[in-house]
Image (cartoon, rainbow, N blue to C red; front, top):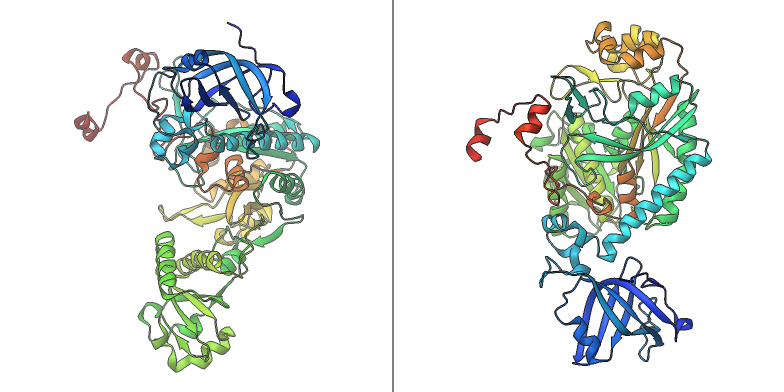
Length: 591
């Protein structure tokens, strides 16, 4: 069978008229006019070409052939009489003298129409992902992903970084999420872990004398899905630099990322270096989040002194935060929905009032504020047309709720959000330690391998909650792309840092033997970061769900419904790795 194509389905032009060609592709659709006339659309990876069937013999060759079968078309190119400017090949058509079925689609009905697959239920799309990917609008996101990754690799190489792959089978390490464990056949009772990140390996590479490392690293974390986080596995642009400071890392990232966003993004404008630096505590006070969307020019104001005694019960004894929006003309219905949506996200109620054209306080909680109207207007510099959103509670809760409210107000405003650009910023000076929400005990705030600001002296002399770390987050349009840090390369400082959270010297040496021992042989100061590739591409492509830019994503329950993973395995496979399964009683009853 000869199927070598002479051209793809996006290649033929008017200058090819009269040529004999061979095309291969998918049977997209056929508009049948009569028994000897029909218009077939052939689609391949590159585009579409119209094939005009003009004989009964050629029409018979298509009888019984279902859409999405793969065909080989041989014929002659000619100029179209009714040109189609909407497609690249719209000036020509192919008249076939041979039609061969290369791969038969045996189903008369498809799970969904290929060109409208994005309208189908997500579970069906994921089950038939190979059909979903035939949709040009779905496919183009995966093509975009490939081009972006290629550009990132090229740019990192231009900055003298060496691409080095690190192990997938490694040991369990505390990285902040659950590990995926792999039982060992040759070592009964012991397990490998899939890496949550190449953290230890890249630091060991610095100790080994490799000056600049990077890779497009696969990472594995057993955590729940979100719109901007895929469960199970994800990829990051992992990098590390020896003899480097925080600013050295910033310079590289600020040179590598903006051109990629500007070239491939739905917006063609991206922040120029240097990105804005915002201390963590300032970000929380000003924006109510450590992931601020700087396209929104709204900020928070602490109005506790103004409003805590106004008589409105939710404000009594609580911190009260305000977001002032000028020229906000939304209806009561829009405002109520906006506050309800903000409550769903933050878990806390929002309140409001407006200043009408006469300078009066109206709407929302206005009746509680009439006696202190002048004080409020002067304190917040309010003018007619101003809208004031309010949140209250413990300080952290009030800030969090106000941060969510700020975002919704900015998005709803016509003048307070610049939507057609990528705004980057660095969040810096994170606390080294925090009190864990679940444990109630002192924990590392971010990466446990970070260098404390002030080094050993700070660890010995300061209250742990007052110690800052050389840790930083990269944020773009309100999405955290990455965390990074100047690493703790001194074994004595490492021991002290872990002792503060209750981990003994013996435990540190036991949990991180390779890295600790490597540092004892003279480690260079080093720093790094690892922007999430999936999140970057999601932003660049303008997609709301991260699953749209992953070739074979899992669903929200970390299941691959196409392949049927996770799946049961045979008793023999379990015996080989010395595993016996004991299901919870609820699972036994269900099966």
